[in-house]
Image (cartoon, rainbow, N blue to C red; front, side, top):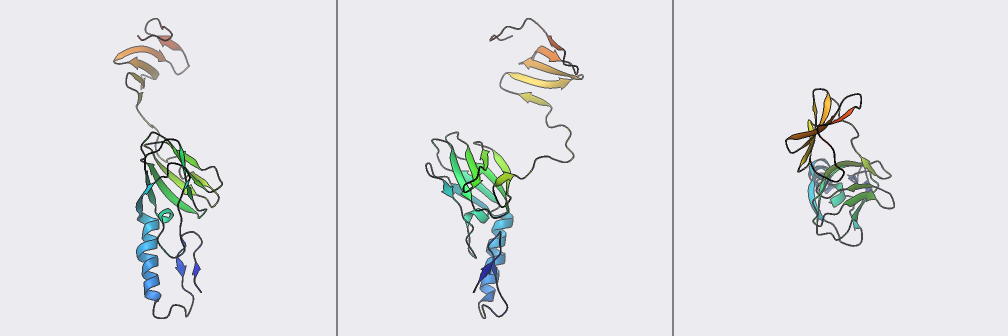
Length: 190
């Protein structure tokens, strides 16, 4: 009787089992199932309605075993993708259309909401999906400027400088002193 590994559901061949067929099982374990877990990339359509349920079946290929899951489909509201509670690392890309987030979670749990167009590193801790990374070693500067279509916030000369286009409209010193370059008008533009 076959038994299976806890997290990746690989077939564990017992002593004396699968005489004459162990090669097929071993090749499936190594050439398909481990490959999915280590470097598998799959595209999964998200159901626009009920939760999309992904599985890791015992001894055979399954979407939730893949390392990288690209979510696709056209959504009309935020949706959910459910995976088993197996301890496992995931990279999830919400490449759906419609502009909605997809919550990636273990059935019955909270999970993590992946915004449309974003790629997240997540892990199942055996209970739920949580962020795989909460810090990065060696990075002291995340960005040199925060920029939208018309506005920029950047550091210059030990101050935060607020710009509209190329025009400096205000600055804030390291002590919190806010200085405007001209009169500020609520709801107006410089």
